[in-house]
Length: 590
Image (cartoon, rainbow, N blue to C red):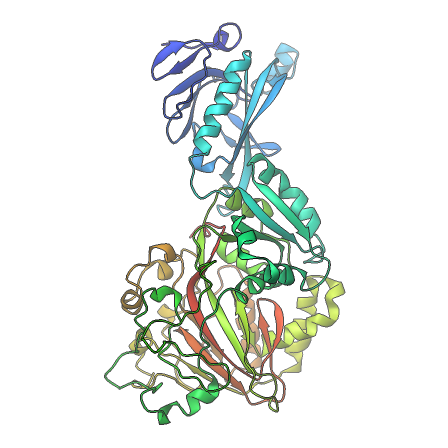
């Protein structure tokens, strides 16, 4: 069968299921649809719709350079396939002028015109392409097709929409919070940049521009579960601290889990009968046998001590997770999203590989999903003289003490500087040459036993001078990396069904820096900030994968940095919940 240019000018043809016929509409999204169309700036093509996407075939490539329009300017050569999984919208544009194939300067001079085109009915397919130089960066790709027949264009739009409706996991309704003061106070502008993407994808959005610090937290805390269930997720337009505010507003009122043991519990744990936090030298870590182990704390049984510590089990032996059954966690349908507009955007960098708002918006409308481990941090004492009073916060990416805590505290004085305040505050703190003394205890996992310098038989270990892990083990963790995607013996035993959590490993990565010369610490910091750097390959850096740890400061003041937010804590403990929330992201290119 031959289809030439006259097919879309005078006598439109559509081939469905191999039969040649007129421009008829079909309700079957599985049948083959084929037409001769004009692709803007490319030329005559045969467009075919099949079960998983669109295929394009050039009819005449002698008068064009094979470029396509991606965003504003052509960036890649002609593509012959567009997957529906990469398409986020299609729209009918009505009658108008559509450009023909691009011509070289010599052709323009010879023919006396820049290009040729026609007036016809048009429809546009919105997709994306990965940047050739930065694979993690997704660039908008726009394919505009033209045909003289109105019904032909409408048929294509209807059939493509029907195919897109079959794509699972894509959001339909989202709650969006915008922090107008994040980063360089660009929250509103960032949202205006990506809002058309949500509109083309037919995603409804309820937008709330926050008016003060804690506004988003209050909205999430007070929102009824039935109200949140009407949304497919919550989007934060801002930085890490803003996302942390939204996350805590959501979890603190819904995720009711037992606290990890406090530092004082560990000191006296060896005196407790039947509840020892020290294991037999020849034994293994005692694991809870909850029906849903992935959602439970990875600690052995605890007892109520009058400070808010709840039992891990009820009297009948069942798990005492205390989840809100009206909004179970983790939730496969309810996801969080971040459109970066902050100062550092660490979470977005770890889960998409770039700080580009367009890339994040595309991950959201296409329904990508990554499961995140969430750390529950319990502050027991604010200062040395404080009473024991548990206070819970959650962190999605980072909890830092010492230099990092002092930097975040110092930077609060210079918020007017924007993102540059971190460089300025960091320089000031570094020049102070402060040292910090604290006691850290952590759960030792089976992988730690491979290190011969770690004393066996001790479940919790005090911070002390010893050889760090082997360099081969010092791998910076990020989404979809080989370490997280491979199951260790320890993880496979405690989570036999890890499919929904394949992109999270269920561990905190505890880094401890001790006995460090000032100049070498600066070298470590530069490696930490450098793309492809090796910040863990220093003798003074200890790296431990652990499900929980405790901390007690020996100083008068103790300041932490939780996802970019200030947190005062003299005594705290933390535990991880594997895959507790899902994020609209696909992970960076590895």
